[in-house]
Every structure is written in C-alpha cells, then in structure tokens.
Image 1 (cartoon, rainbow, N blue to C red):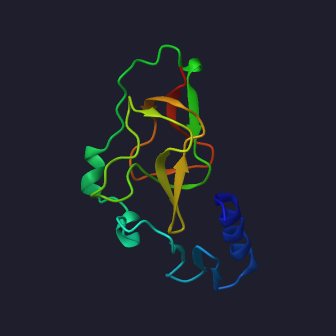
Image 2: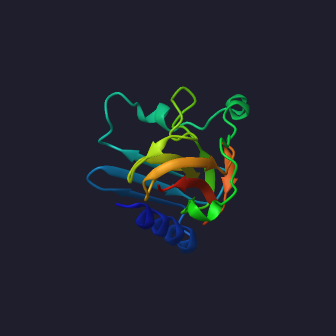
Amino acid sequence: MNLKEIQNLIKFVAKSGASEVKLEMDDIKITIRTGGDSAGTTTQHVTLPPSVPHAQAHQPISNQQNAIDQPIATESETDESKYIIVKSPIIGTFYRRPSPDKPIFAEVGKNISVGDVLCIIEAMKLFNEIESEVSGKIVKILVDDASPVEFDQPLFLVDPS
C-alpha cells in the first residue's frame, strides 16, 4: 500500500462518518479513528528491521531538540533557479529525524540519491517517510524541525549538478 492509497483511505473514512476503521494486509495494519478526543491514525508495519523498534522510530521530537535542529544554509542563493525544489506531498508536521535519539535524515551539504529518506511528515498520527525523487546535493532546508507544513510547500533546495 503506497502513500497515495493511505491518504485516500483517510479521506474516505473522514467523509464516511465512521468512528473507527481497521485494515490489515500482509505487511501493514492501519487503524483510523475519527471524532472525539482520540482522533488519529496509527500504522504498524509488521516487517520492521530488528534494530529499529517501531515505538521509538516514530516518536515526535521534543521542543528542546527543536532549537538545536534549525535549518542552516551554507551557500548564498544568488541563482535559485538552477536548484530543484523538493515539495511536501501532504499536509502535516515536518520532522528531520525518526526520533529524538536518532541522527538527522538530511543535512545541508549532504549528497542524496533517488529513494533516500529526506524527512518524515506526520499527518493524523501517521508518520510518512518522504523520499527523494532527485539526486544531488542539499543546498538549503526551508522548514524548521517540528513545524507544520502545507501541501506542495517547498521543503528542500537540491543542486542536481
């Protein structure tokens, strides 16, 4: 099940008025709850690597970490037209690392390739890994850690050369 299918499922459940929907497939279990104080979506991938516990891998970053993880630009952007803009595919909260005790996914100056995880965007308690669709070097991170982001909002500037 890909990200688009999960997003469509969330929208469908929200419109249907159902209070809870559970979906179990081969490698994924999804529970969507709507209404009340316990609104949210949880996802469990059954086939996780043994070195990454599911509960720790997807915890939000504490506010104390936010001040440390501010975006930093190393180059002046005199000609941003040569850069590729990586945009948010969904609305949610932007996180630069999988959990507070894990390293940052992508930093300024890091070379990335297609398929590398750049960040996580949390939407309705569902943590979505955002993968790069381009190869290149990260020039600038345009969003602060643990900040809300909108659909199609620029997240990263990547130099493809």
